[in-house]
Image (cartoon, rainbow, N blue to C red; front, side, top):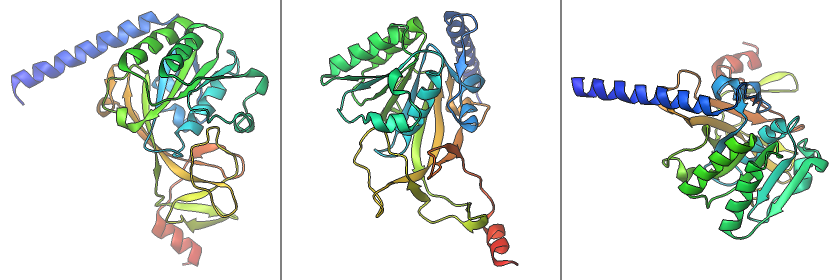
Length: 282
């Protein structure tokens, strides 16, 4: 490696460290962090949780991939002691009964219906800046860079948490969120318990989800009329001041949603060959 490359890497590291110190200094002393509702998912966040006064981006490869469910679960946790959940619905697809089934108190749920992009941006800014919302949730594909920066400042001012579900196509754009996560369906390669036995995981890596999703996204349903829930892969793309390639902690996690309760948990993987031997009694 040339001396120029070494110098450049040292300079970048120094600037990143200065940025981290500057960001920490801007936050209120003792700023709280909340859980996402899943211990394993918490470990993908700096200091093990979602910091108040920040944005979190959940990027989805396509509709129905599970990003909205994870965002709703984290928003529920963020609202437990910090005010209501404000949902900015720019598509007219939010389904409040599903949010209630996910554990959101209907008395602490505010849904703002908007149509125009400028109204969506304004509503997000006002809800985050107000200081009265425990969390603000929005599924959006029309957020500009200038708008994202404004929302970051609004979250800092209000002390709440903004959860933005955005298309994966923005992954190469500058990130104003504290954490940017990519959520995508994944095919299972391990084994799964069924009636107390270890079974090879089904090739499609899917199972029935009896808990309805909060946004109607046109996803496919099974023959029993219930929505199919995929195993999910969650990957850290960026944290503030740090590239994912430079993260020392775990960067990728596989999750599943319990088909009876909607609880999100890490997928327990076992060696498929060993599981088949156990199943066959060998």
